[in-house]
Amino acid sequence: MFGNPAESSLHRTLALMTAQAVTRSSVERSVLSTGMASVDRKLPNAGLAAEGLHEITGAASVGFLIRLLARLSGPVLWCVPCAEGRRLYGPGLVRAGLDPARLTIAAGRTPKDILWAAEEGLKSRALAAVVLEPGAGLSLTASRRLHLAAETGGGFGFVLSPAGGKAAAMPPSAARTRWSVDPQPGSTGQKEAIWALRLLRCRGAVLSSASTAAAGGGGSIGEWRVTVGEKEFLKASEGLAENAPDRLSVAA
Image 1: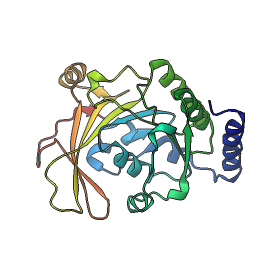
Image 2: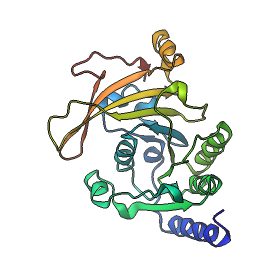
Image 3: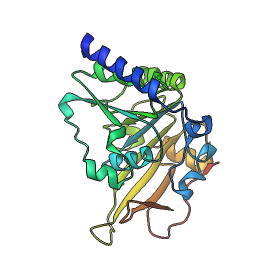
């Protein structure tokens, strides 16, 4: 466990953030644009919804998440097990548009510790977002508790899942969306990367019968080829191949 001193320290930090926070508008807190029009126009409300969880998995999940966080304003709490030794590279964060000064890292000795820290952070209206690296699979009950905490605080909750990125391999969850992000061959230089972005789940979206069947079989219901350019901007084209046709059937 964190123990009483650490719990008190987190509560004091959250209280200080609350006192210093500039009130964000309800519009800003309700929807988060991915910054990629071809992705946003397929999501309900043209972006990721606040007051709930979003799961991300895959080898490029951290890079994708950092760019999402950069589109928010306000502090971010990042909860991680001590054993993971998460070290976020400051210059890389800056290149991706995220000021390292906005981050507070909470490292816990046990899964219970980091779940508690994430839940407390999500309840607080001082934070723009809370990131949880559970270190192991997150139970449905735990995800529901976190989702309810996010509803209370009104912010965004992100879970970096350790699963392999396939829907069939991931346990049930209360998350609003599930994504997988993996490197894809085809970069044109050292300053450019290509990601395969897949939407595995989108709660509340209207799916075609073909997309529903794909999701039920462990496949993705949306796929994009994402280019990370020199200035760290993201550009998405629908389908994983270059110039691929639209393969997503999520109604906005």
